[in-house]
Length: 190
Length: 325
Image 1 (cartoon, chains in turn cyan, blue):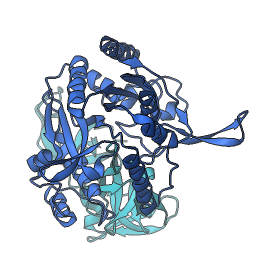
Image 2: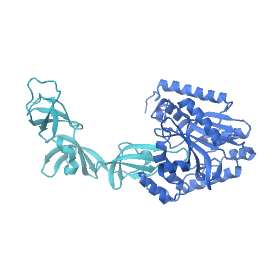
Image 3: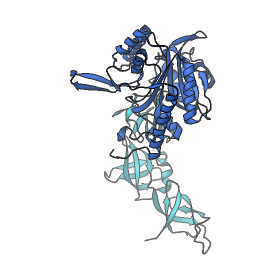
Image 4: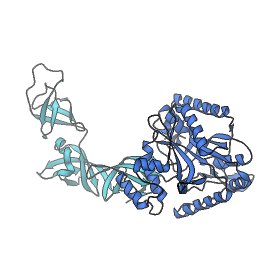
């Protein structure tokens, strides 16, 4: 695997740190006029999601991490694992609960999402920024309310709960922003 | 990158021009002479943590080619003028430092450097403070010794502490230090703590902070003296809002001591695996002839403008930073 020096550090670079794959978030060059130059780096551990800070002497190196993001179609959940298939490779991957994490709230069968692979093993799953899901449970709204103000909780087919306007009813399809977990709009049933 | 536009706004360029003008007025009122010295010079800088850009001249006078170093500061040439009898001088010049780029660094930048005959570093600090008060509207600066500032923020005596204790101190302060930290160069640890813990807290609430009495091992081109049984460099640095703005010396005038420091720099370069640098014999010639007692300071002009205008990135202070140059 490639070796990267501090000069090559930039946001998004995937490197190995303490035996875990990490993604560089920020890289700040710090140098006293008359002294040693340092790089203060913020990284996200791609296994745990934790953000860590680490300082390097300018010129230090880290090994690159074989991390790639692959478009995959979500196939099904067998009760323990979520199964995906590469859109281009047709290769199948199984992801456990820790790997899927909160993405499970937004995964609908056939949906295409991004799976992050480390050494060809799934690390995490990122759902599309917005998904269309059916409401399976919500209180009947008040008649005539179309303002969208207020709102009520609605449970979606994936089990996620989002706040929706009062006029939205059971069985309707809605579009949801998966990053914020927020209702965006109603979608006409086809 | 093909963006032809400047990264600085037109307002910033007006402010920059105004500041250049104000600084020239400041020195005119004090009878300090403006000078210009070469940017491309036959000698470079031995300091281990500075890296010259180099280039080569070929043509009449040097048909075989003459290596030239772009100056990291105009210090050596200005000292030659002082030795030649120039009196007090200042310069606003472009300087170059390879390998330095970031929010507060562009490899090419503008330095304000000046020398005052008969001043020691305390008198020069007072003048730097006057200048900064005029430009930034700050309150009078506070001054701490290196020892005081380490005691204040880290509760250690930097002159007596061991590397093992500095390592423990970094851990207590939550600094995730590099695995490659030296096990025999104490200054590297002191610089780590200074840049990561102390500096970011200095010079806020409109009160700049001077630090003086650096360890003799960081004296650079400053004189050394014994204070409370410890040898310290008669050097100062100025911090404003967590940023190192200026670096001044009560200048070393002793030619044999200067040669010994250049040699020590090159020995350290050897240890660090860096190329050795040809010593500037012209500067040593000037010192041998006699450099008048003086103090000198280098102040980052672009950073001064950034602080005055509240810019968060040096690219807002200069028309075309490296990737647009």
